[in-house]
Image (cartoon, rainbow, N blue to C red; front, side, top):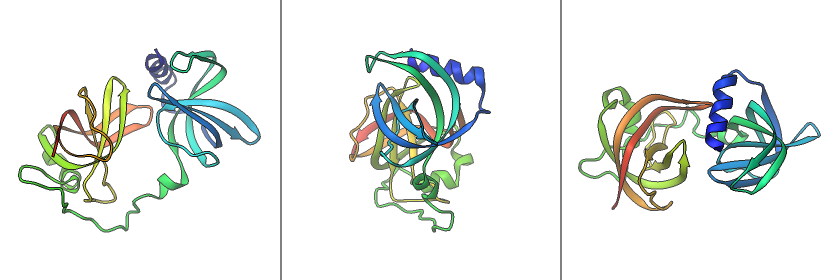
Amino acid sequence: MMKRLLLTLLLTLGLHAATHTAKVMESIDSGGYSYIKVDEAGQSYWIAMTQRPVKKGESITYNEQGWMNQFHSKTLNRTFDKILFASDIATPTTRQQQPASEPDVLTSKFKQSGTITIAELFAHRERYAGQKVRVRGEVTKTSAQIMKRNWVHLQDGSRYKGQDDLVFTSSEKMPPEGSVITAEGRVVIDKDFGYGYFYPVIVEGSTFSAQ
Protein backbone atom coordinates (compact mmCIF):
# COMPACT_ATOMS: atom_id res chain seq x y z
CA MET A 1 0.00 0.00 0.00
CA MET A 2 2.77 2.43 0.98
CA LYS A 3 4.76 1.69 -2.18
CA ARG A 4 1.72 2.05 -4.47
CA LEU A 5 0.71 5.30 -2.81
CA LEU A 6 4.20 6.79 -3.09
CA LEU A 7 4.52 5.75 -6.73
CA THR A 8 1.08 7.21 -7.55
CA LEU A 9 2.03 10.53 -5.96
CA LEU A 10 5.31 10.68 -7.84
CA LEU A 11 3.82 9.77 -11.20
CA THR A 12 1.08 12.35 -10.69
CA LEU A 13 3.34 15.18 -9.60
CA GLY A 14 6.35 14.39 -11.75
CA LEU A 15 9.99 15.00 -10.88
CA HIS A 16 9.88 18.80 -10.89
CA ALA A 17 9.27 19.54 -7.23
CA ALA A 18 10.27 21.99 -4.54
CA THR A 19 13.56 21.36 -2.78
CA HIS A 20 13.83 21.54 1.02
CA THR A 21 16.76 21.63 3.44
CA ALA A 22 16.06 20.76 7.06
CA LYS A 23 17.63 19.33 10.20
CA VAL A 24 16.90 15.78 11.33
CA MET A 25 15.16 15.65 14.72
CA GLU A 26 14.07 12.00 14.79
CA SER A 27 14.06 9.01 12.45
CA ILE A 28 12.13 5.71 12.43
CA ASP A 29 12.75 2.90 9.91
CA SER A 30 9.90 0.52 9.17
CA GLY A 31 8.70 -1.57 6.24
CA GLY A 32 11.50 -0.41 3.95
CA TYR A 33 10.81 3.28 4.59
CA SER A 34 12.31 6.00 6.76
CA TYR A 35 9.95 8.32 8.61
CA ILE A 36 11.96 11.40 9.52
CA LYS A 37 10.90 14.32 11.71
CA VAL A 38 12.68 17.46 10.50
CA ASP A 39 12.98 21.10 11.46
CA GLU A 40 12.93 23.57 8.58
CA ALA A 41 13.38 27.21 9.57
CA GLY A 42 11.67 26.62 12.90
CA GLN A 43 8.83 24.54 11.46
CA SER A 44 8.78 20.83 12.35
CA TYR A 45 7.05 18.14 10.28
CA TRP A 46 7.41 14.52 9.19
CA ILE A 47 8.69 13.26 5.86
CA ALA A 48 8.66 9.72 4.42
CA MET A 49 11.03 8.22 1.87
CA THR A 50 12.55 4.88 0.96
CA GLN A 51 14.74 3.65 3.81
CA ARG A 52 18.19 5.19 4.24
CA PRO A 53 20.50 6.10 7.14
CA VAL A 54 20.30 9.61 8.63
CA LYS A 55 21.69 11.01 11.85
CA LYS A 56 19.98 13.22 14.39
CA GLY A 57 21.20 16.81 14.05
CA GLU A 58 22.46 16.56 10.46
CA SER A 59 21.05 18.68 7.65
CA ILE A 60 19.44 16.91 4.70
CA THR A 61 18.15 18.13 1.36
CA TYR A 62 15.25 16.46 -0.42
CA ASN A 63 12.63 17.01 -3.12
CA GLU A 64 8.98 17.47 -2.31
CA GLN A 65 6.72 14.88 -3.95
CA GLY A 66 3.39 15.31 -2.19
CA TRP A 67 1.66 15.95 1.13
CA MET A 68 -0.79 13.55 2.76
CA ASN A 69 -3.17 14.31 5.62
CA GLN A 70 -4.13 11.67 8.18
CA PHE A 71 -1.76 9.10 6.67
CA HIS A 72 -1.78 5.76 8.50
CA SER A 73 1.34 3.58 8.46
CA LYS A 74 0.37 -0.05 9.00
CA THR A 75 3.91 -1.14 9.85
CA LEU A 76 4.23 1.54 12.53
CA ASN A 77 0.53 1.36 13.52
CA ARG A 78 0.63 5.12 13.62
CA THR A 79 -1.34 7.90 11.98
CA PHE A 80 0.47 11.09 10.95
CA ASP A 81 -1.65 14.24 10.94
CA LYS A 82 0.37 15.49 7.97
CA ILE A 83 3.37 13.97 6.22
CA LEU A 84 5.48 14.89 3.21
CA PHE A 85 6.53 12.18 0.77
CA ALA A 86 10.03 13.07 -0.38
CA SER A 87 12.94 11.86 -2.50
CA ASP A 88 16.48 12.72 -3.62
CA ILE A 89 17.94 12.96 -0.15
CA ALA A 90 21.46 14.42 0.09
CA THR A 91 23.75 15.33 2.98
CA PRO A 92 27.05 17.24 3.09
CA THR A 93 28.79 13.89 3.69
CA THR A 94 27.29 12.07 0.71
CA ARG A 95 27.90 15.01 -1.60
CA GLN A 96 31.60 14.98 -0.74
CA GLN A 97 32.15 11.23 -1.11
CA GLN A 98 34.47 9.93 -3.82
CA PRO A 99 35.79 13.19 -5.33
CA ALA A 100 36.55 13.06 -9.04
CA SER A 101 40.27 13.64 -8.35
CA GLU A 102 40.57 10.33 -6.52
CA PRO A 103 42.66 7.93 -8.64
CA ASP A 104 41.08 4.91 -10.31
CA VAL A 105 41.76 1.44 -8.90
CA LEU A 106 41.00 -1.29 -11.42
CA THR A 107 42.23 -4.31 -9.45
CA SER A 108 40.64 -6.12 -6.51
CA LYS A 109 41.87 -8.64 -3.98
CA PHE A 110 38.47 -10.36 -4.27
CA LYS A 111 38.72 -11.07 -7.99
CA GLN A 112 38.76 -14.73 -9.04
CA SER A 113 38.70 -16.60 -12.31
CA GLY A 114 35.41 -15.89 -14.07
CA THR A 115 34.67 -12.66 -12.19
CA ILE A 116 35.22 -9.00 -13.05
CA THR A 117 35.87 -6.03 -10.77
CA ILE A 118 33.38 -3.28 -10.10
CA ALA A 119 35.78 -0.77 -11.68
CA GLU A 120 35.99 -2.88 -14.85
CA LEU A 121 32.22 -2.94 -15.11
CA PHE A 122 31.84 0.82 -14.72
CA ALA A 123 34.73 1.51 -17.09
CA HIS A 124 33.29 -0.72 -19.84
CA ARG A 125 29.60 -0.58 -19.06
CA GLU A 126 28.47 -0.37 -22.69
CA ARG A 127 30.36 -3.58 -23.46
CA TYR A 128 28.67 -5.42 -20.60
CA ALA A 129 25.15 -4.01 -21.14
CA GLY A 130 22.67 -6.88 -21.38
CA GLN A 131 25.32 -9.44 -20.45
CA LYS A 132 25.55 -11.66 -17.41
CA VAL A 133 28.47 -10.90 -15.12
CA ARG A 134 29.91 -12.31 -11.90
CA VAL A 135 31.42 -10.01 -9.27
CA ARG A 136 33.02 -11.04 -5.99
CA GLY A 137 33.16 -8.62 -3.08
CA GLU A 138 31.86 -7.60 0.33
CA VAL A 139 28.21 -6.85 1.06
CA THR A 140 28.10 -3.31 2.45
CA LYS A 141 24.35 -2.67 2.58
CA THR A 142 21.04 -4.47 2.02
CA SER A 143 17.45 -3.26 1.68
CA ALA A 144 14.48 -5.61 1.62
CA GLN A 145 11.45 -5.43 -0.66
CA ILE A 146 11.74 -1.93 -2.06
CA MET A 147 9.76 -1.77 -5.31
CA LYS A 148 9.28 -5.56 -4.96
CA ARG A 149 13.04 -6.15 -5.04
CA ASN A 150 15.77 -6.93 -2.57
CA TRP A 151 18.74 -4.58 -2.97
CA VAL A 152 22.31 -5.66 -2.25
CA HIS A 153 25.30 -3.27 -2.40
CA LEU A 154 28.70 -4.77 -3.14
CA GLN A 155 32.19 -3.28 -2.94
CA ASP A 156 35.50 -4.94 -3.85
CA GLY A 157 38.06 -2.18 -3.30
CA SER A 158 38.18 -1.19 -6.96
CA ARG A 159 37.02 2.21 -8.20
CA TYR A 160 36.43 3.98 -11.53
CA LYS A 161 35.82 7.74 -11.63
CA GLY A 162 34.65 7.70 -8.02
CA GLN A 163 32.23 4.81 -8.54
CA ASP A 164 32.97 1.91 -6.20
CA ASP A 165 29.54 0.66 -5.14
CA LEU A 166 27.57 -1.77 -7.32
CA VAL A 167 23.89 -2.52 -6.71
CA PHE A 168 22.34 -5.94 -7.36
CA THR A 169 18.58 -6.47 -7.30
CA SER A 170 17.07 -9.86 -6.69
CA SER A 171 14.08 -11.85 -5.47
CA GLU A 172 16.44 -14.15 -3.58
CA LYS A 173 17.17 -14.06 0.13
CA MET A 174 19.74 -11.38 0.86
CA PRO A 175 23.22 -12.29 2.11
CA PRO A 176 24.23 -10.75 5.46
CA GLU A 177 26.04 -7.42 5.51
CA GLY A 178 29.79 -7.87 5.90
CA SER A 179 29.83 -11.23 4.14
CA VAL A 180 32.00 -11.95 1.09
CA ILE A 181 29.97 -13.32 -1.80
CA THR A 182 29.94 -13.85 -5.54
CA ALA A 183 26.95 -12.14 -7.16
CA GLU A 184 25.76 -12.91 -10.66
CA GLY A 185 23.15 -11.17 -12.79
CA ARG A 186 22.38 -9.26 -15.96
CA VAL A 187 23.83 -5.76 -16.46
CA VAL A 188 21.46 -2.87 -17.17
CA ILE A 189 22.82 0.61 -17.87
CA ASP A 190 21.16 4.00 -17.39
CA LYS A 191 18.34 2.48 -15.34
CA ASP A 192 15.83 5.08 -14.15
CA PHE A 193 13.31 3.89 -11.56
CA GLY A 194 11.95 7.42 -11.20
CA TYR A 195 11.78 9.73 -8.15
CA GLY A 196 15.55 10.12 -7.88
CA TYR A 197 16.66 6.51 -8.37
CA PHE A 198 18.91 6.55 -11.44
CA TYR A 199 21.72 4.03 -11.87
CA PRO A 200 24.37 4.29 -14.61
CA VAL A 201 24.98 0.57 -13.93
CA ILE A 202 22.86 -1.92 -12.03
CA VAL A 203 22.74 -5.73 -12.05
CA GLU A 204 19.25 -7.30 -12.09
CA GLY A 205 17.84 -10.79 -11.60
CA SER A 206 20.80 -11.54 -9.37
CA THR A 207 21.81 -14.69 -7.53
CA PHE A 208 24.26 -14.90 -4.65
CA SER A 209 26.68 -17.56 -3.47
CA ALA A 210 28.97 -17.59 -0.44
CA GLN A 211 32.69 -17.70 -1.19
